Amino acid sequence: MNNAGNNSGMLIIISGPSGSGKGTVVKALDKSRYALSVSMTTREKRPGETDGVDYFFRTMEEFEDMRGNGKLLEHAIFCGNCYGTPRDYVEQKIQEGRTVVLEIEVNGALQVREKFPHCVLIFLVPPTMEELARRLVTRNTESPETIEDRLYRAEEEIELLDKYDYLVINDKVENAVSRINAIVDAESLKPFRCEGLVGELKNGAWHEMRIVDMCNEVSEKRTGEKATVEKATGKEGVHAKAVV
Ligand code: 5GP
Image 1 (spheres, rainbow, N blue to C red):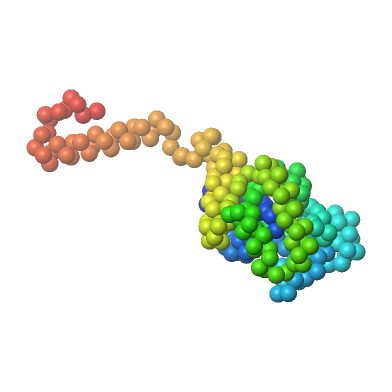
Image 2 (cartoon, helix red, strand yellow; image 1 turned 120 degrees about the vertical axis):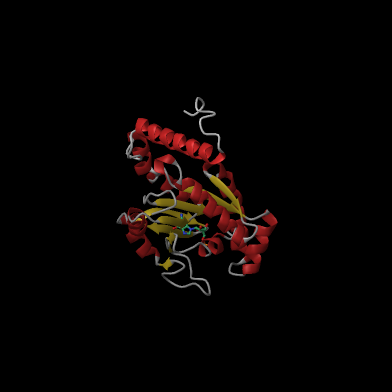
């Protein structure tokens, strides 16, 4: 059950230029609240990355096999490597009513929007482009050519920003996380995500009493309260006409 009192799942997509800190922000999200999808990729594993945790690292052949069998929800090529979202995990978690988070690039995000029109697209950016370059250089996981490639790619991705629902500046990880939580809270209160409650409100099942009975009950209660006050203040009967 989410804060809107319903249990329909939600799909959140977080994109943003390489070096915007998406990975760090997504890892800092509350795991009891969000189900994080693990992508498949053909790129080389970086030091410190674990298969099945950071990505499912697969050969081109294995990737093609998954894609050919319709087991990827979306897929894209990014700076020479293939990336894709395993379909089963996402569909299963949404059915369970979980809020699923995908951390993927823009082309994949737009493919998902075609299939799940109500998914929420969030674009994460660092405070400045210089900061982006600094983060890419200091994390020291890519060659200078790859960094340059990723910076040009960042410019292309920013061009597609208008297709997104929300923009989040990642000045500090904790700020970005609370902005994402606020977005998800607000999204979960949209009427189309609370169909059960909206239905009850509309068909009157939300209140057990008829409106006329409610009014009578409130009116009787008020009359009783006024009489008690007047009795206590010795003004009994003085404003008898005014008591409804
Ligand atoms: P990296 O190589 O830095 O881990 O990821 C490169 C880019 O691929 C990032 O923008 C990341 O968000 C994106 N990416 C990661 N997984 C997927 C995926 O499953 N699908 C798509 N379309 N992009 C992905």
